[in-house]
Length: 118
Picture 1: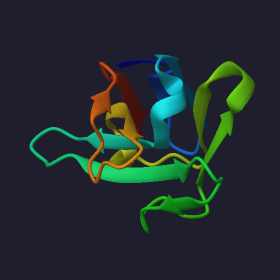
Picture 2: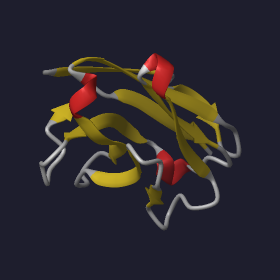
Picture 3: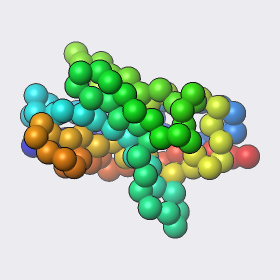
């Protein structure tokens, strides 16, 4: 089992920055990839960024050049640095982890609210 705890959400003005953190605990050795998803009111959950255990990353087109995903293996923590925030980035952001050998993200955090005021 893996437990994920997000932090760092809040209210920010358009153009501002926030950094989200996701601390993993438990069977972290089984994690093959971690990612950030978000869900805005009335919309489906969507991928924001992922980072694999080998270090490769992938981003949604809507956040490329503005968001950066990174990790600190010693702390079992993944970060999402969000710059040049827009009102359309307002959503609940969820951290997720995918176990080795799985095709889906099988562990999820509780979510953290990010609100961007215009």
